[in-house]
Image 1 (tube, rainbow, N blue to C red):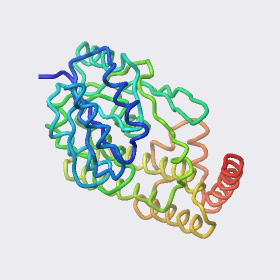
Image 2 (image 1 turned 90 degrees about the vertical axis):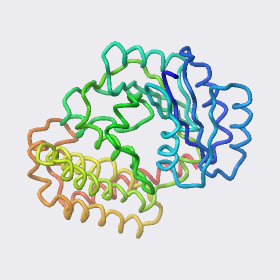
Image 3 (image 1 turned 180 degrees about the horizontal axis):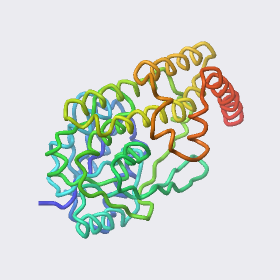
Image 4 (image 1 turned 60 degrees about the horizontal axis):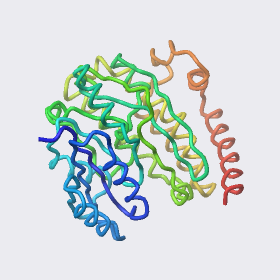
Length: 326
């Protein structure tokens, strides 16, 4: 038995993969396995995987036809033997004591999930993201961090939940995390930042497309899943608040980065219409009404006209950003 299985999905990251794998092999906690999933990568990633697997038996290389990030994570999970499971993308890397610290916390508090803070690494700078330590499940849905790679999960608990990643969409982490929330018995937190989320220069230039609207498929799946499991009445206001927050905050900023005025306008209108169709009474959401702070005031006072104005303002700022960088 190993104590931790780390699943690393790989696609077109041959330049970054060695740093990722080096950081995992350098962990102060040694009883781990590193399951590297080649998701049909057309570059030289497989050569890198083979070289590392030949050097260290903790590297377990598996390969499959290309199916996307979610499919690769699901595929890797079937090989996991550890008491806990973690996920690291092939272009990110971790601090040397990240998993030792998280495993100690998991065992101390008998945790289903342990979360750490994280670094944002940009091409010429970095910052640290410090999240809130949330224990209330309703609040976890509304404002919890859904990313998977700053967490470890108890394997038996995770598999018993039956939750996997939805394939073929972006925003897969949101669906995965929110589906898990009702099953959480104990979620623990580490104050230290353990993982480096790398913003690659080529990724920054890859501007968003209408694919960002996949988030509404996530919301549809969540509503369907919660109703099927009998959770919906308890959490419906939290899911509606989450949809409102993502649609009017995160998604608006991403719409602003879409290239092409007509495409940007179409996606903006579709985003607004989708929110109104899926959650027609979102402005009367009790969680939103009672919430404080500038972001919540921004959402409370939103109208169609002010929404389009914000899109235009963010778009103008985005164009200045791109012209100055590139």
